[in-house]
Structure formats: structure tokens, C-alpha cells
Length: 408
Ligand SMILES: *[C@@H]1O[C@H](CO)[C@@H](O)[C@H](O)[C@H]1NC(C)=O
Image 1: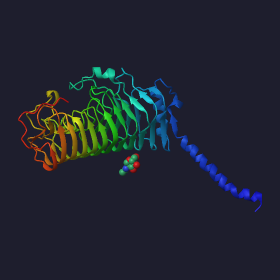
Image 2 (image 1 turned 90 degrees about the vertical axis):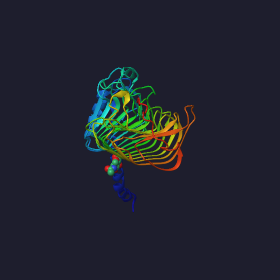
Image 3 (image 1 turned 60 degrees about the vertical axis):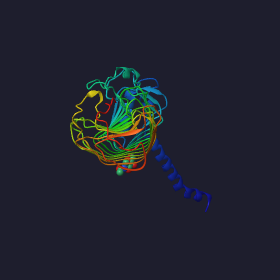
Image 4 (image 1 turned 135 degrees about the horizontal axis):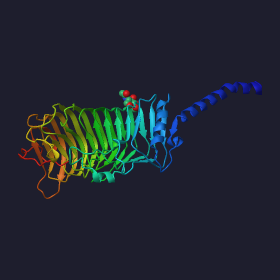
């Protein structure tokens, strides 16, 4: 073969290489950087984010909205689907709420998106301090609700990864009607005395995973509300705050059952509760709460490490005399170790009219080193199946007639 024909033979290969590099160029042009939409550091980027999202969401191929490094101000934002293709919101910078703006229900509300990825090392900063001082929702039934940091409404087959939620004015993350949703490796932080700053709250959802996450806040670490199925919480560290909670259940007529919650390999540090199921007396509805499993949990200085409280009635908002009609069954607490900061380390107070059923308790090893007496358990309307270590002895004596009212 002559030199020329050798070169000719290479042409198809060269063409192929050109085509491949062209395809790569197309994929990178799927990035919608908010700074190309007018966003500038230390300025309000609400409109730029909305514009970048709108174009990305209309893209026929997978797209990415980028918030690059830097600090930006954000007003109440709503990013809506459905989008034409999978979409990613990559936040590398800090998105800061106005400390005084209390408009909208969320700093960022994302809704009706399928195949969403929200990721990055960025921060959603709710700047909640000024709002917390005004907030009295933990004291009253009717109050002005402050915006949450992140709301996910009707989000499906999606992943939220790596981001930080800081000082939310209200809940940090709220999930409504999510399906196949994973929260992985998040960091959620607010001070211990900040009211209503629940870490992650789930409602009306199915197949939700909360994994490898650290939550320090002033209210529940994670709360699994009513109407939820197949929820997995694993490798989560909580504290300070009020611990991991299922409930409160039974307050509203529209509530439906909670079935299938697994909490495993979690650590609670200095929280007011460890793992808890709570329902209101004089419930507005009646439904089952079942298949709830807590295992391999470490407690460090936790006030109520293990608690079922069917007399949950903070601030006397209800009639304690009428028992809860939420039927709790198929519950297990297994391999729970560590320290309790109060003598009542295990409290299982079930409903008189709807006693708990199929409760299994195995390998509980908790200690209390305070001066208020020996470590004990308190039980009512429950006959658990007990095995393994029993520290304290489980349901060894009946509960006292009057239980201390909860305040959170
Ligand atoms: C759940 O969502 C993930 C992330 O988008 C996706 O990879 C997976 O296929 C989904 N699972 C189902 C059963 O649709």
C-alpha cells in the first residue's frame, strides 16, 4: 500500500473520532449554568435559577442546572416538572434565604419531577434565626407558618445527595407524595433551641430511603408522618434534637395507614427521644400502623431511648381521657445499646381501646447513671415478646396510672 492509500484507509477512523468528540460537546452543552442566565455572586438569583430550570426542563436530552461556587441570595422558588428528560440540579454554591422574608412555603420547592438528581457540595441556608424568635407554632394551633428550606412534592425516582441544609426557618426538608426517593449523605444543621426545625419529614410517600446522613436540629431528626409505606432509614446520626419519630398519628381525618418503616444502624446523641412511635388520644381517625422495625441503634445520653406513646398530647391540645384509635402492631426493637439520661429508658404506653400487638423486644442494653433511681421500663396495654439481654427489665411492672405529659 502506498502512503496515500494508507492515509485514505484512515479517513473513516478520523471521521468516527470527529463524530465521537462532537457527541461529547453535545452532552456538555446540556449544562445550564445560572451565571449564563444573569446570576451574579452576592446578588438575588431567583429569576436566573427559574430561567435556567425552564430551559433545562424543556431539553429533550438529560440536562443539568448548575449553581457554581459562590454565595447567592434566593427568594421563594418553585421549580416544576414534568421535564422532558432526567434533570439534575447541581448546587456547588450557597443559596441564602433573606433572614426577614417569610413569604412562600419553601426557599426551594421542587414538584412533579421524575428522575431528578439534586446534588453538590452546596448549602441551602434558611437564615432562620430572626424567624425562630417570632415562631410560636410549637405553642399554638393557629400561627403563621414560616418557609421550609426544601420541599419535594410529587417527586419520583429521584436522588438527593451530598447537599447541606442549614438553619431552616421551619422544617429543613419536607417530602409530600414522593415515590422511590433516596436521600443520601446529607448534612442538616440548626441549633438545639430552634423551634420546629425538623430534619426530614415524610408524608404520603412510598419507597423512601434516608441514608448516611447527619442531622443536628431543634426538633425531630426524622419524622415519618401519616400515610407512608416502605420507608428505610439507615446509618443516620441524630443530635441534638427530638430523635426519630413515627407520628404523630391520628390528629387529622384525612390520615391513612403507616406500613413498613425500618430504622437501622442509627446513632442518637443527646436527643430528647431515641426511637419513638406517637399517636394522639381522642384520634380523629382509626387506622393501622404496622411493620415498624428498629434495630442496631446506639443511644448516647438520650432521654427516652425507646418509646411508644399513644397518649401524645403536647400543650394539652386534646382530650387525654379518650384512648387513641391508631392500632399499632408488628413492631420490633432489637439490639439497642447505650446510655439513657433518665431512669425510664423503655416506655411502651399503648392505647387502652386498641392495645399494641405483636411487639418484639430483643437485646436491649441501656444504662442510666443518674441519681433518680434504677433504670426501668414502663408499659401499658402491651404484652411484648422478649428475648436476649434485658436492661432494663422489660415490662416488669405495670405502668403508674398517671404518665407525665409530653411537651414536644
Ligand atoms: C428508582 O429511582 C432510581 C433513581 O432515579 C432509578 O435508578 C431506579 O430505576 C428507580 N427504581 C424503580 C423501581 O423505578
